[in-house]
Length: 186
Image 1 (tube, rainbow, N blue to C red):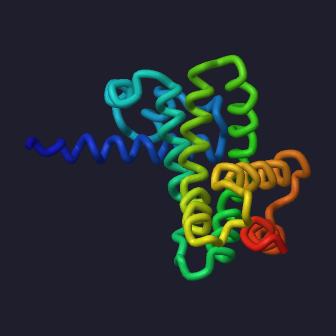
Image 2: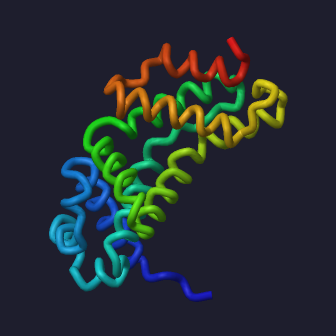
Image 3: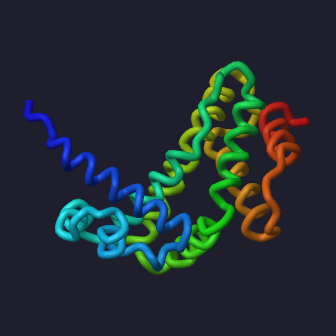
């Protein structure tokens, strides 16, 4: 099997880091292949070869931002694991990412490519929440009658509502209360 060229991997990583930084600091409109090339020092041709369309570049950059933000559950205490990931999810809804997410939610209603970006972001963004809740469900720790999918929806909905509508941050108290309600009903 032929090994991939390490220069390609380095260029991809540099460009992706620049793309993620642009999204984080300036928002979705600043993210173009030309700007990523200029900011990363990777040639335009390479950036266009790696991401021929802007939607895929945005998906990968958003995935990079979300990937960096996840916690590593200990598995010892599902309430603590879930509360930590709720806090992590909440941090994704702060700052420039708030605008990116709000824009994606709006544009996904009429643009299939943006709907795909939103779906990929949501899938990656809820990966750890889903894993913690699925383990709790499997171990009998999720309240009776609540499926993993419903619990994920409750976590995301409550956290989105708190950040995007109420414009409040998820506090430790909020995260623990939400985790306890889902896992113990108290």
